[in-house]
Length: 461
Image (cartoon, rainbow, N blue to C red; front, side):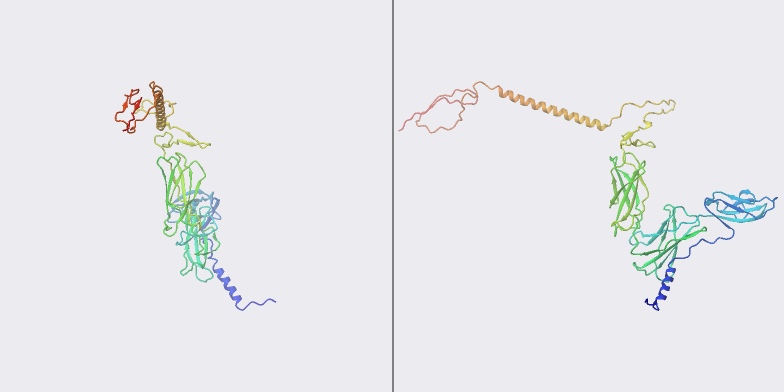
């Protein structure tokens, strides 16, 4: 058998329902319209009626008052005649006060308001850095009507306190509403907050779904990098250097960012991307020669927490080109056009093929030369190769002549050389007698002694 609910359970449930109802945001509806206001939709047709019954012999004239007119029926632009005025394909510029009159007598004054119902907010909240306020935003597919208002309310969950209210701002370039969240004083980082939004104008009012956030759980989404520049590097026809700086809302002394760079040559529709860039510069090494490139940078927390920032503003740059190279870009003419096989077709500049006389008397056009223009670097390489070849040839010839001359000298020795034994001169042993007998040598060759006979008499005392 089920137990009956306790005495305190029912009041608690009622209290929770009241708190949930209080957290559901503020009422959101269209702004009130007065009885003389006629609402028209953008691009639609509308019919304005002056009076229910008008005599047949009376001419009714319509006019729309210019801005700044003091009273209805004053100065204005005449439109048409008749009791009924048909306006086709309404624009925002058609909004204004329309009056119908007979002669100088005013019959009716109507205020036409051309507005489009707003889009339902789909809110996302984030921080621009770890120590910044929380921002909530939602995108718009189309530009809202001029009278559209966006409001945001914030309050602590499960409390009966009043919500803080603030107005949101629309950014036309980004096409989104942005609101700064005013956190109630004394709110802890882990406490839940209820964020409610409303977008309204005279045509309609729509409330977004309530969003529950905590200050510690809001993701970090940095602002886009600033001061993005693209520079050419000298004598590097395929290099570009990209530089940028941290956004002002991010302090790099405490937390760093990592970056992503995307670039494309202007003829190409798709971007090429470079990830995991931790510096504030990058060298692009595969740029197209002589072609303007578009570069953008975005940032994220260094550890990959949170979301990527929006892309920065586009920066453009062109790689370095040799001023002596006739294939470089000059003026409005492009000197290189990428082909399907990644080669380049060279188109010489038109002004290279004619010259105008100072007096303008002769306007003849010179025929273009059929001889190709050679680069000075080709001459230097060819000349150096030729000199090296000549030096190598001369060295081989000299070496060959030296070897030939040496062999010839060895092959023409005098006769008799090598037929006698050459004996080195040395000190003889002590003579056995006082008077040695020694015959004089007969010279056979310059600088050599030939020993023919050596005799020592032997006598002992």
